[in-house]
Length: 430
Image 1: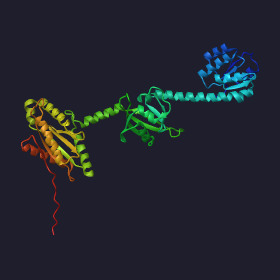
Image 2 (image 1 turned 135 degrees about the vertical axis):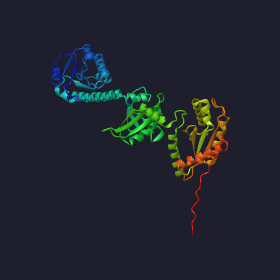
Image 3 (image 1 turned 90 degrees about the vertical axis):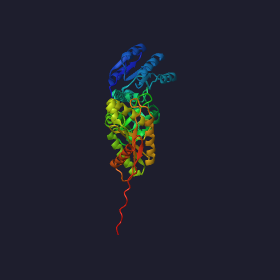
Image 4 (image 1 turned 60 degrees about the horizontal axis):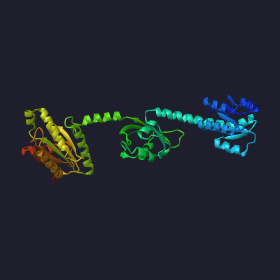
């Protein structure tokens, strides 16, 4: 903050005298102007810390000077001076934005007690404004979106955050619910699939200095993934800064590698590794909650003949066609995987043995009635098993395979089920 000396513009038609000497003694640079035009010319190139205008000037003149100064920098004190003012001068001065009226001649005491406190306060305001504008400029130049909030009101958004929120004008303090209209959808990973702006703001503020993964979708912008960090702001009660680091490309790569690691490259369905992981998860869930769970193993009939007579490329096309047909005829909650070669596996949660057998019979019929491009008369055999409390991943698959072999042995192009083996309780010998 500036404590002085202050630059002073003194506009008076009177010759320099006592007032000018006082200003030179207590002030810094003194810019004297004898009339309105000279004052306007000075203001074209310079802006003083204090402006002192003599009411001996024509009223339209000092009004114009005051308006010009206040228009460029509203916080600069404008002091009117003169002999004892009349009511009209005071009213005109107030309308022009004057801060104070002092009688001539000016004294050092008046400067110290009346004028300089105004100048110090104005300098403090300008310093704060400069500091804030500098901070805002730095934050705007930062590529990471940032905002400041107390959880109810958003006090500030930098330019990248404004662009993310599809907002055009600089944000003034507004409620989080208003901002929510611009950012309608946010997914806070590991907390909620979908949550509103207001909801996830409160969640992340409860865990300061922690990082969260969020996906943000604006009204116009595509969904992007960010690493979000919230930091309490020292000296600002309940205020937190939220910074967003764009990790969309990293997350996309992670998803791509995960997809490559869990997807069969030929058919696009899950691969065996993914199937084994999911089956283990579903068995744990079924064992814990007592929900039914079934498994169907699917094998193309006489597939070796297709490869031997038509070539492996034709066999690949047949596999792709079958995978697409099966995917189109199962529920979204079911999981289809290529188990190996011409064999597929289908996990059916919340379905008992009889229900799964009906599904298998339906799929068998659909495949049989479909005219495929490469192998028009392609058929499948299917084996069905259902989870029992003593089952493991291995035993459930083994039983479905046994049912599949049974379907093959009975003539193929059909579905067979195999009941769980119930081990009898040991007989007590007396």
